[in-house]
Length: 172
Image (tube, rainbow, N blue to C red; front, side):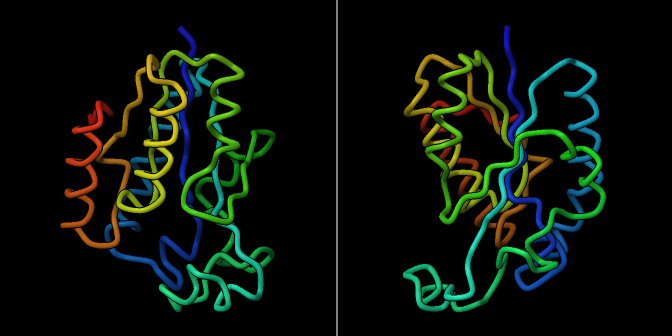
């Protein structure tokens, strides 16, 4: 069995920056622990980074969410310091929108049997990537670890977990 752990957008702006929340801050130790477990188990680990340019406010997303965040090269775009050692030497996928077709292509090319997602935000980027992966790899087991995710709000986190369950994504 080949396993992939996807660490979604664990960047400063989503944890303790422009769009940070206490819930996002609270999952950092669990995310570190999960990465350590998956490293020990020999899983492949990939990180995603929400990546915007300085014209963010002129984009559709920027008009609907007018909070500048994750601008490439800024401190808020960087992974939280606790995760930097784990990302060193690993694949980091920069994405300019919620989900990444590049991630799905990589997962399909490498024929992963099991894919687990953790990170931020459950109700935007985690659910988007989980759905893209499920559509691209319908026979792969796709999981989301609820305790290693946080949403924009606690309620939207729970709503996203329920929506993923309905689409045969396992929530653990």
